[in-house]
Image 1: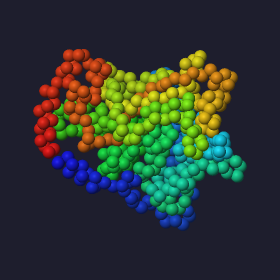
Image 2: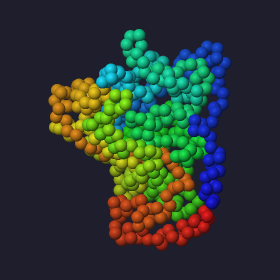
Image 3: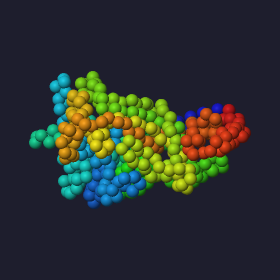
Length: 459
């Protein structure tokens, strides 16, 4: 089969997911002689870079946001301070800290900002010389980073410190970030591997990885400002955006019929037909693991195990206590049909205001008592009568639309009949089409002859 041959050729050309070996970085002899002294060593050739990095989302975990409802345009939002039910907390209430002892008498150091590229002494959003010196350049830029050293510990003063690999060996392997450098945090976001997005960037699950590409081949940063897409749930951004058309243009297909769809159908709709990760979490009921620590009850799926839902999206976001998702319609002249993973999160809401309440994970992680986590968070946030807040909190569900932006396929992309068949993946009625339009859009005359010809070529 021609298709099988094509795929086989692509896989044969695969470069391993960590990326091709980088060319030797200038300054090797100096590092071998003097060792690696953190950002100070890097700044001998890249002056001012550490200070520059402190202004990025990777360091601040927040930014001003202009496309989401009900946000103050003067305030920065992100994992530093926002609350939503994938995490139900943030860096403020779930800072890296020691969890109280569980029933087995064990404690551990953990927190939402475990992936922050600092040392925790200089934490999220910190500035100044100490913060600049705390930046972990190599966690992103070394292909020989020892991630076993990237774990929290207590120093002589009892402070919780995030360890870093600042070895000469790691510094001598510096270059552009490979897949592992990115995925060590982004694959495990939301509470574990394949939880938040079901993101598995490897040859089996993504066409870009199968070509030997690494994350920064698409997410090309400038001055450490990394471009991102318009995920309705991903608010913080560095002010630079990313689209498939940046590389593939507005006419990416040889087939003119397919190219006509680009005006109203996002590339992801056809080329990301499956997704994965957590589809639901319950923060009101925690389950005890074998290690005797507790975790919120989670229902998850592997990469490529679930199918997305489809909606019009104009890149602005509806933001309500029980819903975060895309705004748009077929008539606004700005929207395209995009695929999304539907996630449902159950957590506690304020009985009086109806607002979602944050949760400090430390108490329930040790004891399973979810309301104790609400009370602790309310105390941290300076809310009046934290005990009453927790006692009167009411459980409720929040629906979140996560953009399907990875797990890209070429060989298994949707074709005409997948959407235009009478049982196709697109619900044209829910997308705003009339009964007459639906009848026309699901008529085999649209696709039959074309697909028969394609079938002959493939077989």
